Length: 285
Image 1: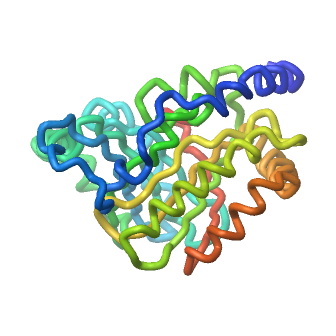
Image 2: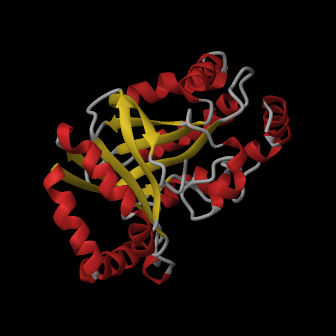
């Protein structure tokens, strides 16, 4: 698909960026809010995104990735893998970084992990893969309400990103993922405030003149289990780091976004950004 076609698609979807899919109260959707529905126990389980980060021995990263590539189909048959990457720069490298989407929440994750542990082929893989690891970390996240409200933010729902943003025609070896992590101040209202501010300024960033046609926000996550008050942005740059830089420059000209970032800075105690490259077997590439 040519750059002109991508730009046309971006311009014609501006209305969908600004038009919400539905408009629930943002504070009622965050689990720590005092506005949380008291009858939540009868509602559908909240989908969860699990982020697993395995720190690898540097000299064993290549054999680990070969083992993991060879067993990729087995992994995807057992658990709902969405994105598998390795960091290129911006922090600790040699960290296998993988995201899973559990539509049925904790129960779905527990069932999938239990079934995986009983699979002989998976146990055989672990016997070879675990010596490559220095440590393992698992954190559970929920997707911000804006993911369900904005058409151009697909989230991790299986099939959604593939069909709406990441066509095979735009996949190439230059694609990078930018993972931006915010550690926020303690407090029950800090994350809801962040999410509200972010959603207010996001449309101006997405539609800023000069934004690369293959830059897309995939999801915005906040912690459910793990280091609380952490928020993660996941951006896909189909045109690589060059596209990322063009989009960053464009965002600086989005006045509403700049105003929001100034307010978000007051809520934050730490911010990091890291460039990742997707594995060949990653569903999202």
